[in-house]
Image (cartoon, rainbow, N blue to C red; front, side, top):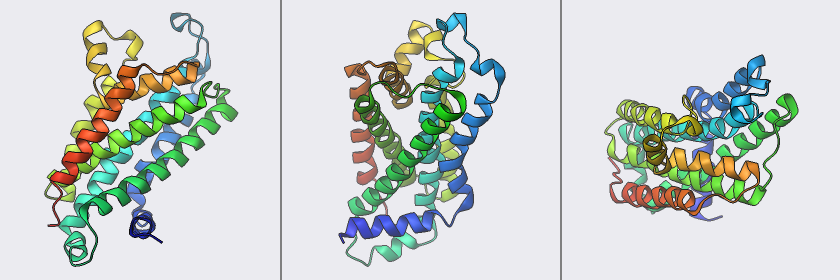
Length: 246
């Protein structure tokens, strides 16, 4: 068993000891899906959407919001709390390197978020008759790139924030504009050109559009894939660069 594997298993066990964090990371998005899907108007064809239903449009958005919540209000706060409580200081005396610690957190978060996404897709299909993604490979690639980008941003927040509480506050501040440009309140299709251009350059906006394209059976646009990949690389490098044990 490699050091990364051992760290990932250990971090997963510790993560499930925090019920509030678990709720927002893995339960809130599926619950939001059920609530929205239970509204009759969400399941009715909408002429403004070309006959599609709102719930069909919102599934990729809710999937992306679930990742963002995990990254910005769960993962970032958890990691910063480790530093605040001296957990990272004690780990400093071991052979564990910063990259391995960050890698274990990202791997744990990615695995749990993928499982949550699969649950949401299954619930949407079985309970609300939402079509499954037509281009599965493109959907998975888009999802993983989006997850890595948002988790890297979350780890960057954790690396810079001095305490767990401040990490949670900063994460929440970052979450709301990202959620807006991801289409949570105003769908991307209803945005004007300026807002849509900004949305294209944000990880959530680019990720949501990639998921929607894959769901419709199209390969995501290279721009959107490049944006999510770019955020993952830049934020990940910065998180590693500003990593602090205490």
